[in-house]
Image 1 (cartoon, rainbow, N blue to C red):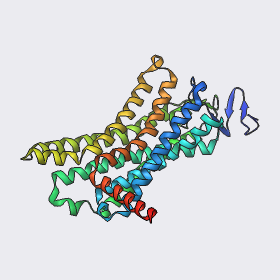
Image 2 (cartoon, rainbow, N blue to C red):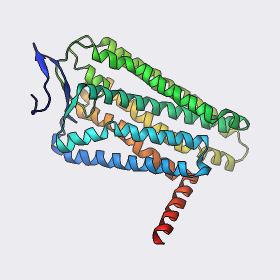
Image 3 (cartoon, helix red, strand yellow):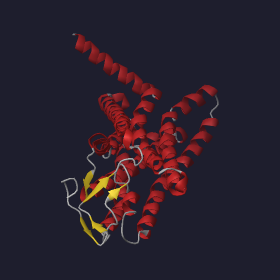
Image 4 (cartoon, rainbow, N blue to C red):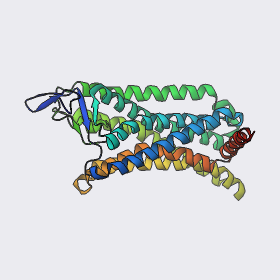
Length: 325
């Protein structure tokens, strides 16, 4: 038994694990309570912000437009993304509950990467929405219909499941693992793959191919959309019109930069940082990449979008008046 909890079979120096042990952030064990406090703060703020955003959009008929439908989908995905990892991270940092069952680990990995994939796809959908609204405004109503949005979301969900399922299946086919101790805060794909007592080249190549197929393709089309948007904006006759149109894109641009900026920084530091960057830095970056964007997204849209600000204040005023009565 390990800590009297779950048995892991060890034969000739290899493991046939029924569970993994998540270390958290190796090297920062002395400050786990403070790390847990930061994780809890990010999680609670993100969950609260996204729930408020969902409530305001669903309750306000003036926000029942494609732009805000995409935003509500993003808020739902952000809440699920952070929930897939934050509770387990808090149990590690605050209560030293490091064990996670083999199947539970694979399930967490699947949800984490699926929600990350969906996040990327929704950002692409939001960029497409802004492109149609600015570059083809007369066709906006006929193109950006609820039917199109539903089909896009179904496609994005299927894309995540179809592309990432083989990664899960290949991990299940490993004959054994060198250890069941995972030097990470959650069940990240490559962190588990590197523990295998087998040839991992196919898994590594597949993980890289999936990442580039999803994030690389989405980022490319988002950049193309914004090149077309900027070209259209700068051709507008008046400065006031240019600023007004450009302001509708600022929240999405901020979210795009925070998500992909952290993703690229995490990827590059992990792949090319080598021994120059301490392991705990890689893990902190990975944790930041999964926890910070879901926290920032509702704040960015709440601050930068006038319609949302107005509806939030309206809801607060209504609540306050009812409470006073």
